[in-house]
Each structure stands twice: as C-alpha cells, then as structure tokens.
Image 1 (cartoon, rainbow, N blue to C red):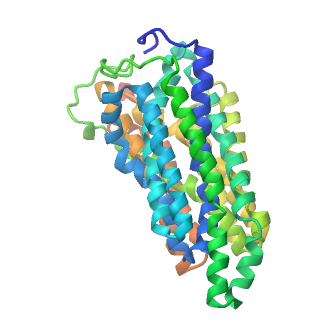
Image 2: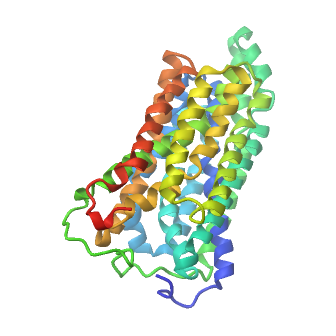
Image 3: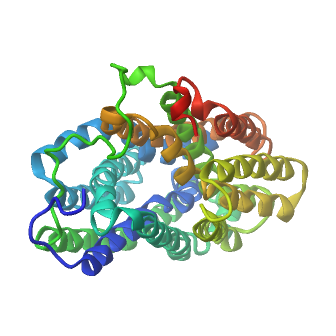
Length: 426
C-alpha cells in the first residue's frame, strides 16, 4: 500500500508518532495486572469477580472489531485514531466516579470503554506500519512497534503499583479486625488512590488525540480491496472454507488468553504464595521483560536461522514445559516459571498471524478482522482461571494453560495447512 496516501509527514516522524501509540497500547493493556489485586481488596471481591477486569477489557475486541472497521471507513484512519484516543480517555475518566463511589460495575464499564477505544486504535494503526516505507522492511518496523509496546508493559504495572498498592499489605492484614465504619473509611481511601494516575492518563490521551488529529500522518487508501498483494487467486467463495484460518483464529484466541493469564495473574499468584504485594507488584514487569527478550531473539533469528512456524513449535512446547514446572514446583520457583511464560508467548502472535492469513487472497481483510476478534481470548481464559482459582487454588488453576498450549502446538505442526491446496502449504 505504500504510496497510496496524500502529502504527509516524513516516514521517520510518522514512525515516532505511531511508536508512541504502541507505547500507549502496552501501557493501558498491562495495567490490569495491578488493577486485579487492587480492586479485589478495595471492592472486596472473589478471584472470579476480580478477573472480570480482564473480561471487561478484552471482550471489547470481540464485540467491537467489526464495528471499528465501519467507523474507520466513515472517519478515515487518522481521524479514527484520534477518536479512539478520546474514547479511551472517556473510559479512563470513568474511574473517577467509580473510585469515589467504590462501585465495581463502574470500574468494569470504564475498562470496556477503554478497550473499545483501543480496538479502534489497533485496527487503524497497524496498516501504517506497512505503508510507512518499503514493504520488504515492514517486519523491521513491526519489531520496533513491538519493542515500544513491550517497554510500556514493563513500566506500567510498576508505576501504577507504586501508587495504588502502597501499604496494601498492612491494610489487607488488618482489615478483618476493623469495625464497620473504620473498614469503610480505609477501603474508600484505598479506592481513591486510583483517581490521580487515571486523571493524568486521561489528560495525556486527550493531548495525544489532538496531536494525531492535527498531524500530517498519511491517510490510508481504503478504497482498494485488500488482497494481500502477491497472494494467489482463490476459487473459494466463503471465508469459512479456509480451515487453516479458522483454526488460526482459535489458536490466536488461546494464545491471547494464556498471554493475559501469564501477565495479569502473576501478582495475585505471588501474593497467594506468601510474597508481600510490595514485592509481587513487580512480577508482571518480569513477565513482560521475558516477552521483550523473546521478541528480540525473534528479530535476530527469524527467518535467518528458523522459520516462523518453527518458532511457533518451539514456543508452544516451551509454554507446556514452563506451565508444568510452575504447577509442580514451589514458592518463588513456581512464580519464576510463570514469568518465563513471557519468553514462550513472545513469538506466538507474529507466528500465528502470517500462517493463518496465508493464501486468503480477496478474503484477507475479513480474515484479519476475525483474527482481531480473537483477542477476545484475553477475556475468557483469565475468567476461567479465576473460577478455577476459587474452586481449587491459584496454582492448580494454571492447569488451564496446558491444553491451550497443546492446541497451539497442534496448529504449528499440522493445523496451519488444513484445507489448503498443496501449492499453498508452507
């Protein structure tokens, strides 16, 4: 698509702007790891109820992926990104009345609105990585965006955790002995801690929306049918005839689920193992650091030393091994292997996506929308983890990861070529 846009900013300046957007994606996405233990205390929730945080945020991708495409067709991509940022700001501001009233439903509504804005942003911003320079170097630009996202994911839980989880251990230890009025006042004070960081975040999102709106970013030409130039023509007449895509959607759904479980449950899991929250609040950053390390290994090794499919095979078996290690080992060692899932998960998205989209021809656009909808796995799998954490234990609940990784391994070994003609198989 390069060249199909009007007079615009230089590629370098545009990449910086989109890089900032990807930083925002990572920052907002991984705040859930802190919000789960924070809201579990402040709103007095069970594990299952607390993991509605991830459900409310990620279900918006499933609900809004197709409407987002319609919105962008009406607004254009640049104005659509600005609108997405403003919607995210609105969801962020909803945390203020939610905190003042200590109403969990309002927190969840704010997270859903944030996710809605983010789904529009994700749908709009990704095409820019292709058009801002030669197509053959697009992978390098995608890698840069991934690093921006990963660095933000490392920083976000540390920053929010330092604000809202400060003294949370002492409060959690003494709250049972408090009288009703003292207990109410203490929980209200904890809830109010979220107001300041989310107010600052809303201001940043609004300023960034204004910057995007008045920037000279290129406008994507949406008038052409996205046929993934270079893909062979297909005689199929329905997207549902592409078995490798449908299996890829399931694989991506499960991958996003296990990625969110690894990142968003590790703080609460560490606390359940007797590690104080003042220490455990850093654990999500360890998981994200593992993802960043894996991503950089992928940049170096793919495709020079291994193919994307081989990377997916290795990643899925590492996921199985690390999950089983976490299940059978104790204390800090178990937590370490949950953090190591970040390494296993890092190359799954960039490996599953091209395998699933291969050979779709004129169906590439709708196939991409279906893969975006698969991000809804981040809503469902963590919620199931929360249910099993209540029914069994936070550690035994990690059994849910094993069948997910097994299916991803199946997709890497056989499922990626299901239903494809011989000449289209990788």
